[in-house]
Length: 319
Image 1 (tube, rainbow, N blue to C red):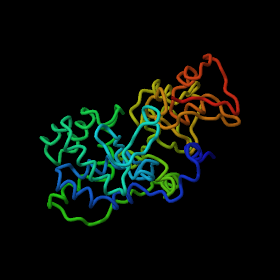
Image 2 (spheres, rainbow, N blue to C red; image 1 turned 90 degrees about the horizontal axis):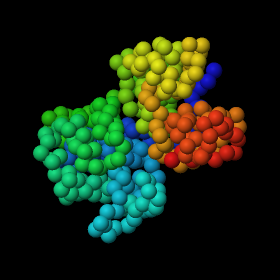
Image 3 (cartoon, one colour; image 1 turned 120 degrees about the vertical axis):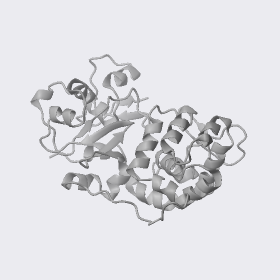
Image 4 (tube, rainbow, N blue to C red; image 1 turned 135 degrees about the vertical axis):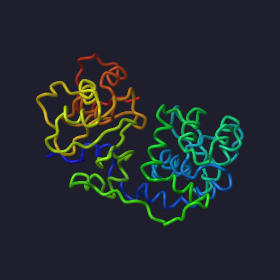
């Protein structure tokens, strides 16, 4: 039976060491976010959601090495320490801080001192959806789903309660709600190690977890589920569902426990990985599904014919 090695293979084992979960991140920085809300009128829910998203819950290289939790680049006028890394372009300059708290403070100053964000402060301070959409409209990030990604995290982790606590309208019970796994598969998927590795973004009414890989939503299949059944369950047209998962003979197959099943179309490039070395036995389809990138785009980026096959040791560019 297949397990969850499919997605675990995306990350080296060393990344699991000393990683923190989103819940731990929230508990660590919620008080700072609420203080910044009182001082600068930025919803604590938005600050925490941006921190979770931009820093990978504090586990990204930028957060660990530069203490930069909000992906803020140097920009004109920055005279502090800097950190150079590849982002949208090669060797981009990011701000570097002495500690994470300084990053939170600078995030507040960044939003309050730039005119393009001024309209946000006309919104109700508890209107986190308006803030999320406004940040995207003002150009904070290039990801087209940025606003929804923030809203998803606020809803999933009940971050809006920290807005109410900061305003004195609710007591802080200092407890994050626990999400209970519904079966053995999800207990494995939601172990402390995997909770840090996977990007959990939503949960259905029947408590089925939805994850994200390369900004593409997916679920883990249960043993014996069929493409038709999953397409119907998640409201995806059957033909599109099959296209998303590169299925050529969907009527003849069933999924195994732990298979990754995409609910949206694959992307034109991978937002994190630049290139990948093909492993023994892997096909182009395997690589495309692993990195959530359309196979035809991988072929095009590597100057390969549409019928080309990949082989062990071959390096494929993903963006």
